[in-house]
Length: 207
Image 1 (cartoon, rainbow, N blue to C red):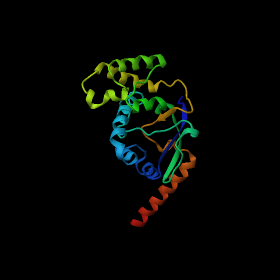
Image 2 (cartoon, one colour):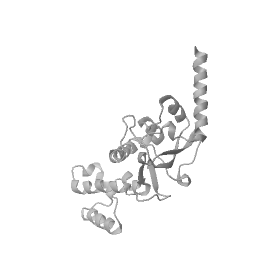
Image 3 (cartoon, rainbow, N blue to C red):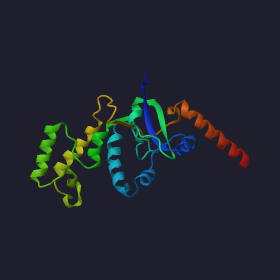
Image 4 (cartoon, helix red, strand yellow):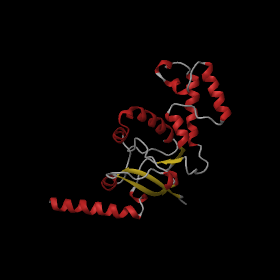
């Protein structure tokens, strides 16, 4: 029996047209670039790291290049802003990639994700022995081709973001590869119906 869960995700208001016309919503590189601006290249590279890991947990459709970011808790989800809407989804649990948002910040900054404080101290000691002040610097160009074993250790630690045994309201996030119409509850189904009716009317008038 399929287990269903709830998820909240903020998207541009025009996404509802994509849902009507294409039958699903996906995240695209263009959207990331528009949202991140001058820092887009950095975030795209880090998101690709997330994609490489996450697609082994929930299969990534060919139509989806990047995940859609969401939260299982309304209180800690992104609030609506101008030209946006928040989708309150009900979808199969096996479609959701749960991860620790606090640990993701480590990955975002090329940092080691420790098991505990003792593990962090051990990693910090390794960096100090090499004269490296922060793990963030380990992946800079000046260390290219150097300390590959240590870099491998850091990359392997990034998988720990998916060690989510239960939903922690504050730091647990849930990403998905797409939004399907059947996951949209009744409060947005009315909007979907209005969009479809409006487009049908425009089409009829055109001919």
